[in-house]
Image (cartoon, rainbow, N blue to C red; front, top):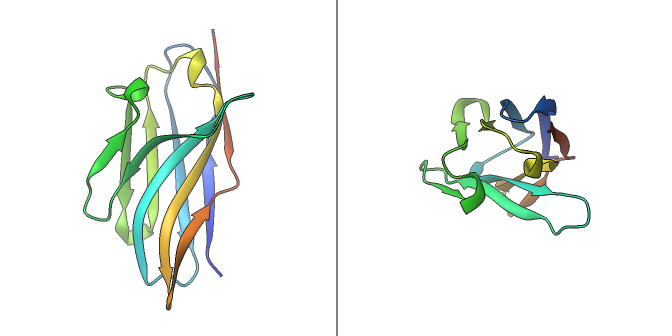
Length: 119
């Protein structure tokens, strides 16, 4: 059984910083693309950033220069460092990972962690 366990998040003031983490647990043969999505109230879930197994990264335009995604392959963990946070970054942040476990390859989602930026 594979699961993604998120940590971090919380409440921060405008301009502050937070880091969220996501660890992939279970029998994992290969950890492919990992990423973070977010969903604000009344809005669709959107990709914030992702990172390949080779370290290539991709960011949504609105977070470029402020957020940094990274991964620790030894720990099967992906991080999202969020700096210069704005109230519009307020959302539930979800970890996503493309994982091969045995002969099965599929997408997994974390439970979500709330990030709230106060003005």
